Length: 364
Image (cartoon, rainbow, N blue to C red; front, side, top):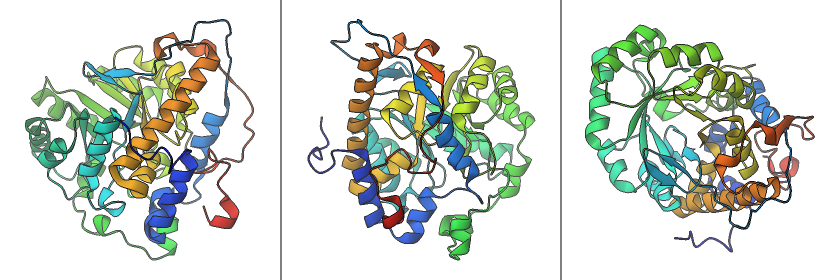
């Protein structure tokens, strides 16, 4: 299956540019922005750019396979479409369109609880493996009810975001006096602020067969506690630099999370992953999947479901190129011997992975 956009978008940066043209300035800034000084956002990119490859030669790479799996199902790439609030702001179909794109591209997706669509409708939207992601807006009984609804609707796992206990100050929005409608309508933030390991244990104990993932793990210490609570998945993330300012880059945190987990849970990571080479780096470090947030939203805004599929196609091309030049034919052959720390060469930013964008003149 092909997106049909092979001639319209031949590079990822062309998709980014098309998204900017089609989005309003307020929604564009909501998508690309971070918290306050945006230091964490830039450190996400810097952490990835600080990793260099160590290629091996004279290996048989005549057939390169970048596929992965989840829930016993084969994925085209080790990719999850990360949960993004108010997808309807980028394309009217919102989560249903994303489900179609993820299904066509054969990658997994997490759907945010900040959506106007019914859980069942999103599940029916496409064949992608699906994880429901929750912002806590009620007591334990409320959370348990959401778990039951998601499982009854056919979701494969349940993810609770744990790094949003306080609303962040995203100054791109604040300075423009742009008040997001979905945040204005939100109630129950006090429940997220009060949600603790004890709350999670009570909910998990009520659903022993559900695969639970915690998103927003930023230290090895919390990864250890998560594993002690028997989570299925640990999601290493700083919310794309949109929560705590002056945090570490996700790729910098990932090694200590992997060490703490020690094989007891699956590991996902996100945070400025923008190229096929970035995904290869994460897998070489030991992650199972990479979450894409802004990147697939560019595809969604640029061309709907086909735009998401085109993002996946281009990432696949990039991954195959990198893997072949590294001397690996499949992801199982990747390990830490293929990467090392080095000096970044680019000034980090939300779009520094796309140097052919004219950042200064075109307002990126």
